[in-house]
Image (cartoon, rainbow, N blue to C red; front, side, top):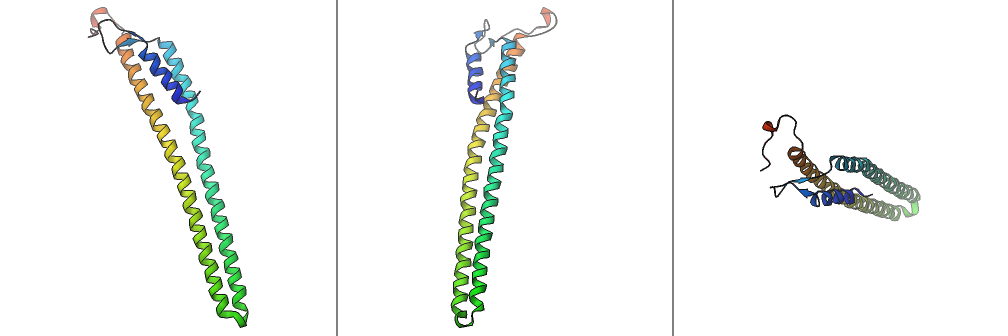
Length: 165
């Protein structure tokens, strides 16, 4: 199950919990059920982290492929340039053509790098938003759980317990 869906279920569980008498903000939740749900959520998070690592690995592969392609294009341009320059009759033309090919190759390499950077940035931004929402939901759930724990479970004498209001 998607961690965000699981967090929504936990929030719904807390929202639907019975209220503590004489309290507007406090409620009672089954501790075992809440802990089991949070453990399940924690177990699901590593999968999302693995997806993020895979996304970063994919980005690196795309960047490496783009660099190799750019290097190949530049090498071909330089080789073509050298071949054309070696022919005495067309030396001037060859220099211009070689420079043009190298410039095109560099422009193409730069364009590919920018496309890869834009793609990776967008993917990472989306993942960052997902993680931010997930962490905020987790924090809200933990805060509610801690508040419930403070209200619902105290050790010691009845006299030591604070009043619930």
